[in-house]
Image (spheres, helix red, strand yellow):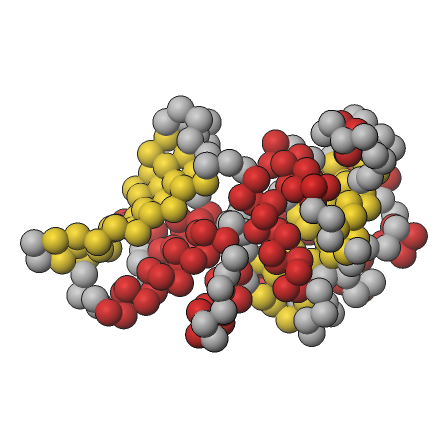
Length: 253
């Protein structure tokens, strides 16, 4: 059984925790959250399960020996950029790290690279399988139709202020200026939708992905954990994993 530790127990973190709790191949060992709320209770009980799993710790209570005293097989981060403070301890303990954070600064991204010298580290701002299939498919289509005009449309819930990290990633892999080619829509409770429009004379091609339920993030994290455990140290992404599977004709699901 694969032992998992999770950073973050917000809206998405809870759903991700529930996905791991529901998969018989995994054991949720613990969860770290920023506050003392529910400290030393169990995530499983708070999520309606009848067993004790996922003991909750406050980030303020984590000491240098935590990853030795509470061993896991992989660390999954859905908290925020502040979760980086725990990465060095995890990396030094040889724990594979899965980071699904979208708002790292260049300095923080450099830290990710440094930690990946010690342990396998998978970094994907959007860890859903579908969006990473979209990333690969968009690059293939761009090679087929290199002269097409390309625009990216991203839709999210009304309270999301910044441009999505996924849209910026799409622009990056397609070598587009995000400030000019990403169009943002904020409406209602949309979880997340991304569309890439390829405009050609007299026709358009549209590639799109929509997250219908946040459980897709948990399923992506499960896929990532299964891949990452046993890999050598290095920096990995869902995009490159899926691209490799495409080349080998291996189904993603």
